[in-house]
Image 1 (cartoon, rainbow, N blue to C red):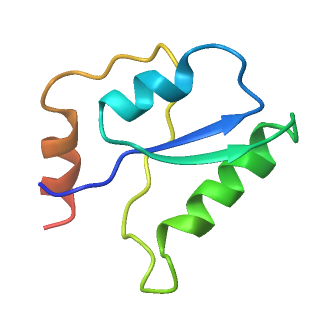
Image 2: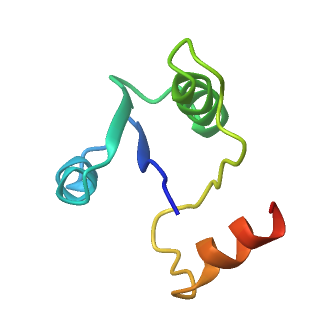
Length: 79
């Protein structure tokens, strides 16, 4: 399974950026609080980078833990 981790940060003042960078995430960041939905919209639009947008986008809030095999199970549904 191939994928890209994107961290959409909305005026964060904690260590979210450094944590995301440790996992190799692409950072989409607003300098000030523009709101969750505008930040997520910017992140999803930025994923295509002028190319074909991704087939699947998973939006997850901070602190959410997925089962270890979740991504594999989701990909299997698309095959």
